[in-house]
Length: 337
Ligand SMILES: NC(=O)c1ccc[n+]([C@@H]2O[C@H](COP(=O)([O-])OP(=O)(O)OC[C@H]3O[C@@H](n4cnc5c(N)ncnc54)[C@H](O)[C@@H]3O)[C@@H](O)[C@H]2O)c1
Image (cartoon, rainbow, N blue to C red):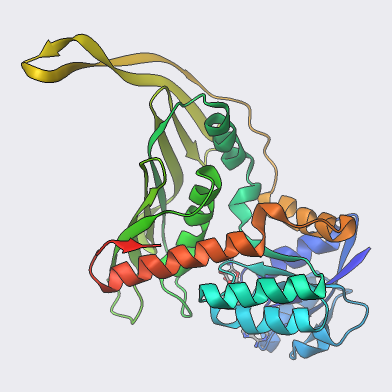
């Protein structure tokens, strides 16, 4: 049984508390938040949990082996560093930190202390995203031409980071997983529609090795909640809709062929669209956050690295975010990684 302390009990932290309270091999022992109302609300739901306003009570508690960080982004680095220095295993919400150097420092510290350091890239534990990976890995889609993701809603608004840093870690972690690494260059535009200091939306283009282009649209100011990805391959195309419980994945047997004959001018082929059927594969409906938190606990117990969402993957996402942010500040200029 691994005792876990959760730092940050806002919108998201209580989900971790619920899961660590119910997993067979973990227990949520203590949680910390500066806001007394948040702690009171947690105590009303999780009656046996200890609460504190000082996160150091969690770090100094010898019964607690693992810490889950669900506080604002600008606190992640300091809390993760201190937790590792107290020899705790760490699951840190996305993004791992604000710079690639900070991520590298945390990775080095975790290695030196022989502790598990994992990032909450929860979509890597989503059955639909795993299915997309399966299609790419098996060659079912053929060579990938492009991918496009949409992650929009009206709110919730954040006051610590902009929409890019809040939402795009999900899409970048998914793209990096699907395409086995970081983009080689990116460009992006952002917009401050609501008159605050932070961009409320961003459009980003990420080029991956092999000439695969991925495009993302993240926004806090949109009429519809959308969580969708389209991937277009040379053989088949696939869509993922996280909000479609009936069948989040649709595989389209559609592609384009060149006819043997030249068209109009020499060198220009006639393009023929080929349309077969659409398959809706069975995708196991389970809670990705539960899968993620269980994986974290299992990695600690089995003393194996959390390869799916380790600090290197967290660093890759942060490097990409930094490059996208630089591009936004230069009004869409191409930034190499
Ligand atoms: N994986 C996901 O799908 C997902 C979804 C939502 C949020 N998140 C991540 O979870 C984290 C928290 O997001 P949220 O929406 O719950 O934010 P939130 O603002 O609702 O909650 C953050 C909480 O941290 C507390 N806090 C701030 N400083 C603290 C300190 N020094 N000590 C103790 N507590 C402190 C605040 O009082 C607040 O209650 C963010 O990193 C966010 O990116 C992830």
